[in-house]
Length: 66
Image (cartoon, rainbow, N blue to C red):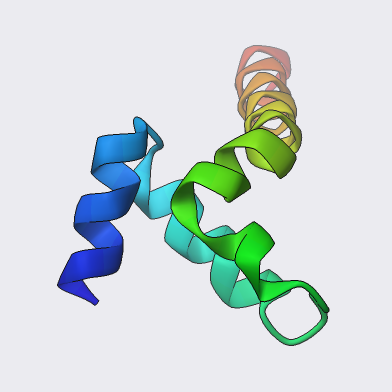
């Protein structure tokens, strides 16, 4: 686990986002090499960051609208 975390840090990815996403994808991803930190960054990071940004924007909008 520590090796995976250090690899993610070396790849420059957010470790918490990476681990959460990999744990969700691992059951359905047929090419597990895409889940390694450097490959994940290329294949999934933009999608995950986009979803994260949408959620944060919605939370902020909900707080201002409340």
